Image 1 (tube, rainbow, N blue to C red):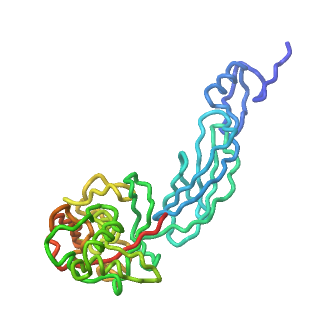
Image 2: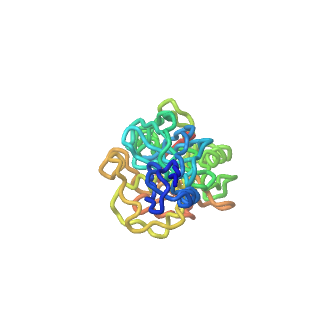
Length: 327
């Protein structure tokens, strides 16, 4: 009787299962076909097409297009950083975490099946992840916001230097209503509304921020409630326990659906913004978010993170201007 040949080896009644790297072993034809059906003996995929890498906070997202040839079996896509060899897996875009701030990275993407890993894509564009507290955009990087509230960052926040972007001001010189300026996320629009409603004598805080020119940038503004909260979360100056009645923020990246715990957030790792540094945010700070039809606005306490949502506007508290940079 002649012996039938099969690409995986000689057909026999005593097969050896194929490895993940190649179709090795000796099987019956039926078993070989079953291996194919089960995805145990697929061919490896082709190379994905690289898309765009986008820097985040100690991370980057990498987009790609799947190859036309997906091989057979379940496909896993992996993005790998250079330098460092750090990886992330999943559908496009893939997030690669654990990156070092101020270090340029490129990324490749591969597709894998149980039959093996296909060739890598071309390298992505180079991106440099940001670390909170890094010098950036006329000030310092303070975090990211998602104006849509979907955890996808669309702006980086830049907090101005204490020497030129901070002062002690009233929100308004009377505890009366302001036209507009009620958004919890749109600080630029709030500031524009306040400036349009009255001059610098009436609205000292917003005009102070709006009139700044720092690092050649003129788009500084008084941050909205959820923007100033992000600066607290990322730049908490001390080791004091947090107020556990504040902290929910749909516009944070990622969004936070729960209030702070006593220890989260912890004191910032950015040395300049610690209470012993040169740029700390200590005490009470105005946001630009007013309450509709009344003479109160939202105040953020940077010692504990507490937010006071009904503070009379005539109070004199700290102001720290910020600006946005589109991601």
